Length: 282
Image (cartoon, rainbow, N blue to C red; front, side, top):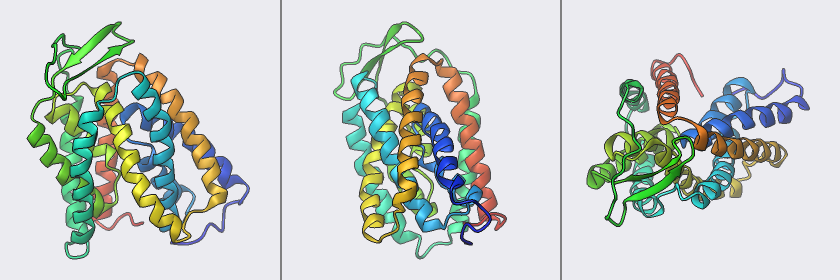
């Protein structure tokens, strides 16, 4: 990857700050953490070396998770018990995926995941019945939150925990192999497989991605790959955007969020297919 020669060094922090606001807002709304958007922008738009871009992306995820996660926990939208269970499987899968990446053709995994994301985007784009059910959950993992847009309390039952845990394990492995953020896989799993309302799924995912990113970020920091000059605008932009994203999530219709996530999934499906075909490299 070439160094940033054609860009004015003074422009780069400003560009990162402005895009960080956008990435933080969208990441907080959809449970992606913002880092998955930042890494594409840093590498393709600003031509930042891949390892430095990954390090900044992890910092972005931590910043987004810290801001959005604290707001969602305060608003009682995050299902903490479920997050802890699924995160254990996701981290285990990510470790296994890192080892598998050394022996399996990554292009094949990218192509498969691209197809899966496309299929998931189509599934999520379809109209569904109102998620704001009145189910009074009595299980230890069942949850509830107040939906500002619907002006009522949403109670939900967590279904298919075993299948969701298995899917999280696979999602973690795939994430470790292809380098895509876990949130873009976790939210559809919770929403489609476990029948968790999209808002609760996004809030729970925001909390989970920060835990995973924090562990990885330490390694990059110790390796000297964290650019402190670019970290400041990254953190500031992401946190400002994440705050606005949390407010937008609370006031958005669930169906709008589902369709927005569907479009993001289709976008990343395209990116992965292009990478698998050798048409896009980073």
